[in-house]
Image (cartoon, rainbow, N blue to C red):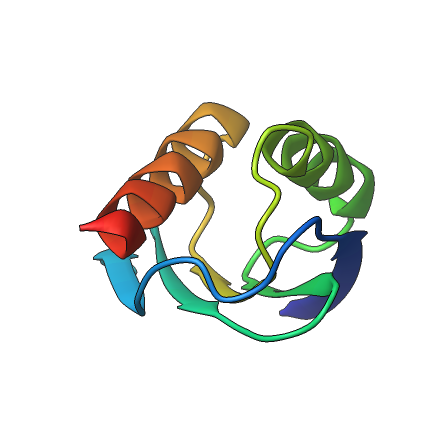
Length: 98
């Protein structure tokens, strides 16, 4: 198990509501998504696969290049691929808006 943390600048705060997507299981993950106040987004990743910090950074960089609100994100990973991670992040952002 490895815990990774990341931080990204935000252009505005408190956009939407809390959201939960995904289920921790074989090849999947869950994301807890909580809009917050401030000018930073914070991401914590608890992953079952060690040594993939650089890949996580690339996936999160891509997501936060388009998502500009301040948010706290907690990810519980069980070996999801980068494509699944990005899909779940986009689902969480969409669920947060509804």
